[in-house]
Amino acid sequence: MIDTLVFDVDGTLVDTNYQHAVSWFRAFQRFDITPPLWRIHRAIGMGGDQLV
Image (cartoon, rainbow, N blue to C red; front, side, top):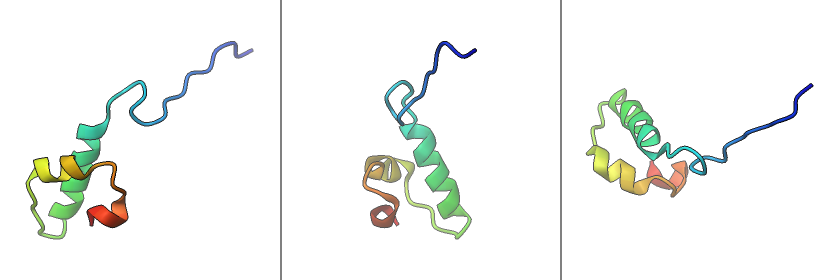
């Protein structure tokens, strides 16, 4: 029987912004696009359609 359930809405319990930015950075690299990581990090939260 499960008596406890823990879930995380992104950023509530664990700050994943850096990992999110690195994932975008690696995706851009695959297409030979290399924006500075800080620029991607500042754009996290905008939504992928605006980031690209």
